[in-house]
Amino acid sequence: MARSSFYYEAQPETEQNLRLMGMIDRQYTATPFYGVRKMTAWLKTQGEVVNLKRVRRLMRIMGLEAIYPKPNLSKPQDNIRKYPYLLKEKNITAPNQVWSTDITYIQLPKGFVYLTAVIDWYSRYVLSWELSNTMDTSFCLSALEKALAQNKPEIFNTDQGSQYTSLAFTGRLEEQGIAVSQDGKGRALDNIFVERLWRSVKYEEVYLKGYTSVQQALTELEKYFRFYNNERLHQSLDYQTPAAVHFR
Figure 1 (cartoon, rainbow, N blue to C red):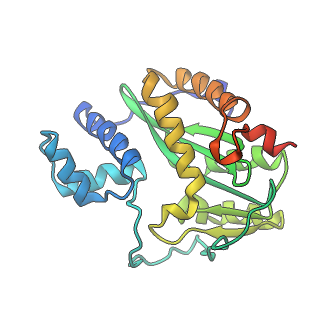
Figure 2 (tube, rainbow, N blue to C red):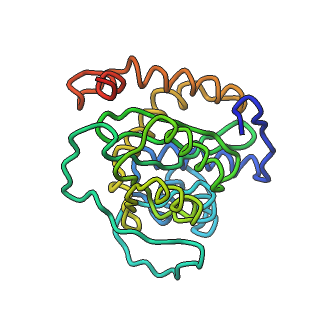
């Protein structure tokens, strides 16, 4: 779906839940190791009357999971594939060696949308991004197609979310001869560069501006990613921009 034709559909969440989701989003960005119990306890310290069931549901809607290793007690569905994590101790030496992707939550005054992006691990260059009002596979595939229109990586890393374990997503990567790598369950640090990107997007853009509409989110994020790629200096890149490293 073209960004110019994206329209917001009201979400059936109460104003109180939306406010709690905003609080959870900020705290999770600061402390991604907070699971349901710690997040519930933290909300109570802020004077909120909440229980584990409510916080668990809201975090599930937001796609948030604490960063820590834990046993996987869920049974795989028929339409997903699992792949090993290929990046442990791997030396990343050039652009287009490894790409990765993820989804994050962005709050609006009367609802919320989800943001996905594809990033190059070596250069930190954001190859593509998309917004959606649902966490379905289609907007993740759209971001993937826009990235593949530019180049392709040797390895593509994702978490084990249903969008990325779907046959549509993994099949598209395999069709291009790209090796699929997946994070360990509950190990968001396996995808550390996307996590750092989300922190930058939230603290440098989203929280400062407080988008009032989807159209504003589209417009401002377009500006931010242009700035991020072409002007923002990264200490880890010897104070170069992602674009300078990616295209040199």
